Image (cartoon, rainbow over all chains, first blue to last red; front, side, top):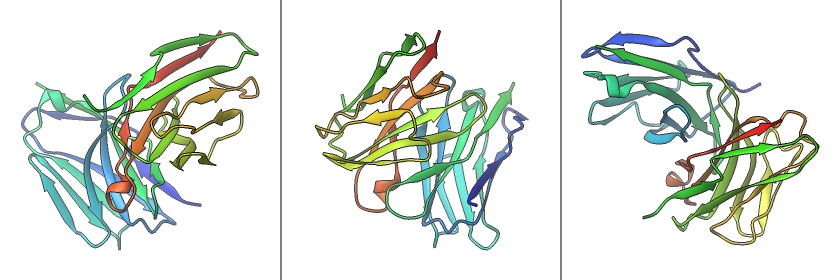
Length: 111
Length: 115
């Protein structure tokens, strides 16, 4: 069956360091992979989308890589700040509009 | 100010009662979605609609119903048949036409508690 895995354990890092979150998938051929940020009690907010034929995408301090051979995406936040603390969700689209999400990884950036 | 609104933010329901959650968008998006989120879990798709007067079941549609009579509105009814309705409900919308079709814009959510 199709599966999207994100590390369920919270990631704690120090301010200024680079945070790296992982999204692995199986039995899936996604056309697009997306990352969203979710703060407690709020709806997710779209951050970045990467296509299956793209290796890397950047937006300000954010970088996403997409390796369809490894079936993995890495999400990096450079020069992390306490305000980056949130849960980050990975979502995959195989075709059409339907988006399937992973369970998310909580990031805590400490001073 | 464009966006998606959901109301109410908090909703309490007695067992055996149906309840309807509101979702409205003014983004002129064709597609709309309902998700359920439980603590420590990801978002699970309940229903989605790609066009007015049409909708499809998602992964966990049992005990829920929807309607899409207007482009901007996609209300969700949680029926008494839903065995465990206490959860955080999120509505989303997206444009049609890849790749932007797959990017979804979410509302603030409704937290439903069954007493």
